[in-house]
Length: 341
Image (cartoon, rainbow, N blue to C red; front, side, top):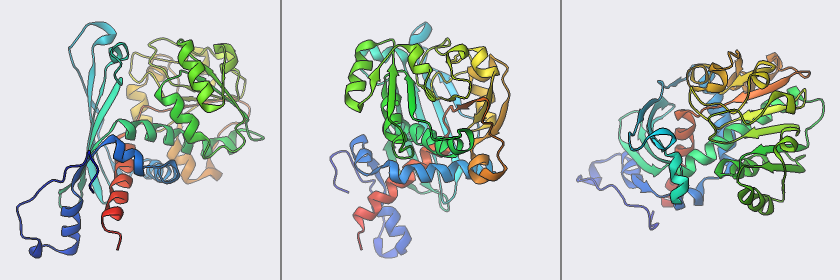
């Protein structure tokens, strides 16, 4: 790998003493920049891989402890950043993502979320790669929603939904449009609402969508909330009676995007019951009950009890298994490029 952002991890050893697998591991240990991740990570590969990862997680095949979060103590109030550590062991790899969230970075022209992912070989503990994790986080979050949509929508809607309302106009809004287009061919009406009207108009122009008021976005068949708001941005009385709400923002036990009516009137599906019940203010502050995990639905749709006559909320807070799944795809792609034969 000769990309400008990659630096091979050098080892002092005699390659002739190594097995073929060991030489492959040595040859592909690297730092992978965001540009290199972007060049090889695709939704075509990521969405099905994430789908399987969610099934494996719900089946108990993933060893993933709760994420540890430390406050940075750099500032008061919402500008006080947080630092998360997310380890996981799954399949033939293990790894850890370290991620930061600094809400005040918007004012500095910096990304609010930044991350690093370390990928290791499970059988020996050898490092395979260290990767920039910002784009991995962005894409895996949208891929989780795409996998969830593809599992929930056929069970929930009598006919394929056509309208998609988005509350928020940042990175996740754009990523979700791209990801959902891979699994939602009937998508024809995208409505974007944001407190930043200029961002909403720009995103709408870039994605063949419409910038609209919040009420119109919330009245869509499928509604995405992708904000950092600490208080509800969607009220239940604005939603369709059988809307599907995909809530991916405002991760934290004291933060929420949906009001009590939206949560308590809905059938709640989580990417992880334990994670959501521990970390989601939407669930904790409303007292809503998680009915099932998305991995259970994807594994056995015929046994799922997703209602057709009730709203559905899919709540996600992000998991390490998703990051490592994406990182493994990146590593495999770069390995194939380095060893084409």
